[in-house]
Length: 341
Image (cartoon, rainbow, N blue to C red; front, side, top):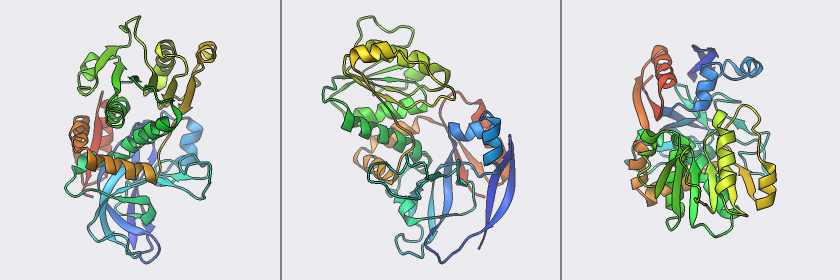
């Protein structure tokens, strides 16, 4: 079967390619219905990645956040028409010690393999998770980034000491919002404090116990643990503030992505005996846990709906470009594509 793939060929330029799909192999044929643009996609689209990286990876189909409907499953795992979320991580080996999303051999859609900007996606049934019936598909589209937060919080739960009276989150963007929301669900008895740079954005964190602008943090404030969801040029300041306000033997989760090395105050890390750990991407188990949380706490979907910046119907390659250009101009929120190509 001939499949149409929409690949980024150069900065701000998509091209159409055709691939052959094996129908009666071990993969499921999924028709994408809703896709979501991630900051990583935009770094490729805008050409802000290193020139060597761009040259090595392009042309490539972008998008690793997406859901769709099963068209054909020769393996018999899914019924035709079933709504599923696609897991972009593709492990090539198994390890008793390293999770699939940290194995250096694993491939990742939209980074080291073609992403979901395709007419159809041929994908292993092991890389699909069934969605609850009637779920808001615009929200489900960005389940991948939600699963990254769930992954980080799950790891935190296994690493941090059990005193969790006050937890802080630095970052008022999409990742900070999602991580904060799920912290309240995982640890309902903990007080949640969110720190950001925009009072307007912080106003959306209605589930938090208190919010602060990063330049107005009270001198007597303290936390048991913290999550850094800032990334970029803001990481050094955020990490320095976290080190200053957390109590000794706190655990600090790093989620923000920075393109350049970040200086860290190791003296205070040593004096306080702090634990720092990083989290990136997620695996099937994290997607499954995320979907379970959707079902257990239906209000999560409503809260996540608040960060949808726009929903854009895409019927051709020009619509793809227009949607990416819209995302490039946004200040906050997720840009969703209703995939009707």
